[in-house]
Length: 258
Image (tube, rainbow, N blue to C red; front, top):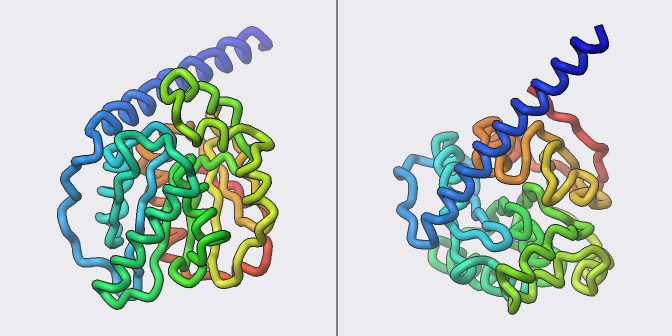
């Protein structure tokens, strides 16, 4: 019986490895689409749903967001993306300033009061810095962070070789001055923040995504899967479509399984 258990567990591990490799391949393929990507087919947004701004992650491009953008659009959300350099490796504070300017431009043109933000990986930190340190609480209704290492990740050291001049590499490391400063700032009232982790995420393990006062959800996927898996898009769509909760109340971890 133990042998059978060992064989079955090994098969499950290999199967998961193949799934994770497939997710990574899709993520890379869409990332290589670059920043000049065609928007998904326009669809009428659901009633009373604010626009959603997607922010891509570290060393990624707008192309990495393609599948999530398309799926959220099909669910009735008006989805926007914005490029942050050739690849996203610059100062997180500067990226947040660019996002702030973009949102103000959208607000001025459309008389929009608030919108939602979904940030993948470092993109979640951009959104978090925006609402904590740049007055974004007045413009953001919900912030959903996908695989965002709120306490830092040593995997950022990979960026030393790929983007040696990128300031974000140092900002993403555990106990960096940037993360300490961000942690000291309180979560603003009026903004619902949700952190979604991947149970098999090795770049931003679930333990690194935990943040005080934030609702936590863990899904059976990896870092790339948080952008390419249909079940993640459905979960994000449900979060965005649900009525905004009182962000001043901390919520416990919420497991989310098939």
